[in-house]
Length: 196
Image (cartoon, rainbow, N blue to C red):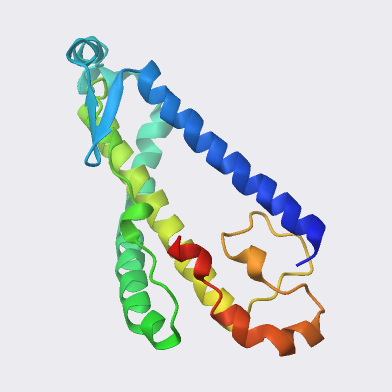
């Protein structure tokens, strides 16, 4: 990878770490702590949150008609996402050990915690579980795909891609056939950064 691209990617990862630290600061601002993956609010904050609930029937009455009409279409995708989750889990369980690719920890991507917020009604909680699961499965599948791509075809695209994945930094430049042939076996096994 060229030095400029490597420098830009390092800046990107640094900003990502800074974002994580800022999110950590919010825990103090909104009076909660995370203990053994469970979020704990102070008692008085929980009581304040309960006063903010909009009852489900009032929530539905205030909803736009388009939101009510499109909700079944959104929820109809759930079966596909469940199937993708299952297939990705089976895929990496069978294939990754064969190729020496480190497995993706599903729990690092699928995070379901927003339904525990006391200011959400039952409909909002269900929607939060759906969105957390859906986007978590997509991120989980993307990481499995990224690691697979690093093993089988670690070559950058000629055209700009919308969003680069976590393994793209290890890929060969488009058109650098000489380096590809010389270093392909090394790059296929270059997952040391995941062990840190």
